[in-house]
Image 1: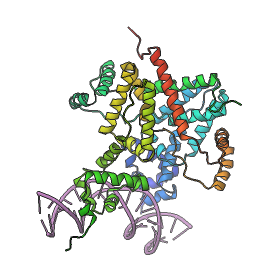
Image 2 (image 1 turned 45 degrees about the vertical axis):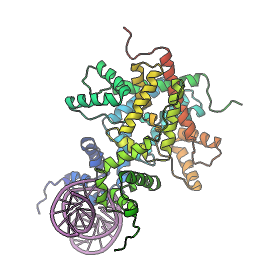
Image 3 (image 1 turned 120 degrees about the vertical axis):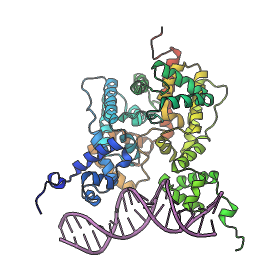
Amino acid sequence: MVERADGARRNPLSRDRILRTAIALANQSGIDSVSMRNLAQELGVVPMALYKHVANKDELLDGMIDVVVSAIDPPGEGLDWSTAVRRRILSARQALLGHPWASRVIESRTTPTPAVLAYMDSMIGMLLSGGLSVDLTHHVMHALGSRLLGFSQELFAPPAAVDPDASAATARALAGTYPHLAKVAARADHDEQSAVGSRCDDQFEFEFTLDLLLDGIEALRLQQWSSRPAR
Amino acid sequence: MVERADGARRNPLSRDRILRTAIALANQSGIDSVSMRNLAQELGVVPMALYKHVANKDELLDGMIDVVVSAIDPPGEGLDWSTAVRRRILSARQALLGHPWASRVIESRTTPTPAVLAYMDSMIGMLLSGGLSVDLTHHVMHALGSRLLGFSQELFAPPAAVDPDASAATARALAGTYPHLAKVAARADHDEQSAVGSRCDDQFEFEFTLDLLLDGIEALRLQQWSSRPAR
DNA sequence: ACCTGAACACCGTTCAAGT
DNA sequence: ACCTGAACACCGTTCAAGT
């Protein structure tokens, strides 16, 4: 048989190539299309070939997460704690924005991956060196929660692009059943002169909430707040 | 054939019975065990029998959510907005606490269910009648996000009960790689005199964050904050 | 020793055959 | 008209057979 330039030969399978292909596949076709079988086909190999580089699907998902999380900027230098944390969280948000599957996958893990642990450790370091007590830092980590990684924690995924006519009709119908909701949605729509798609400025909402939390935390730090009575 | 007391006869299949069984199954064995086939077996019917009462699995999940969300207390009367919202969110948290699968399922839906929409509408009503502007209310709904339904938005599920010896060993190992994390975790552990299981008081953390947000929002209301310049 | 096809135990859902 | 067994197109993973 002639030594033809088959993909496997020119581009041997590796954990790195598997992860990069899996991420590209998830970005393009959604996380549900990342099955071992489908991914193998994408790579031009038999499904079982993947199992030499990843133990199982969970390890594949962990690896995908670590690639994404590792792309978050390192802490900035010479900033007050609040600005430094703010910038880093916004960087995390940017890192995750191109990988809409990532937040769901991260949340589904029962055990944090190394890159996530390293990120959390670094974040805690920023808080401590910013003058927050160990006690306050602990509660702040809980309060920021998944927002640390840039999750918006909104309740619903942005509704896919909708037919304007249909959405106008349903909007009218909804206004009858959910008058308060319609009132707020109408206001938001009006301001952005969109039809009824209820397009919110996600970046604004994210920063609004983040600042609400950071400002509250800074106030607690200034008053030397503690979750336990001083002795 | 004798008229025997078979389950199907005494207890005919209905949408309600399907939903209640599905919820019980999810509570007991986890949401992954709620498959159409498994659920059917639990009910003593053939899988296809379910499809007469629910269109498909998505509709089943929507139904399960609505049952849980409908159990949240209605708004209290005669309270200031902040207290009323606080109580209701804590009630939502209680309602969801017995259904650990619910938050993940709610987040996985692309379209909100009727009960969730009704809850959100009611919450918006509470904010508006509490004196928040439509503009502020809009941003507050984003800021509270899934917390409105009692989600803690923590990053990782509580680690399942761990072997103390093993966890002590890994804790020492982790302390080397993640020193800041270990410092905060050790402090939290010490205070609760637990071993190294890192048992946090989830209720305290939830209320801490909720109050951080509500206090910040009340301050914005008092200063008549607006996301746009007054004209 | 390495690789992989077939198999196992699942899934949600369709569809045609049976009553 | 109603019900349901078999089938379809998947899944992650095991395992034994082939090289």
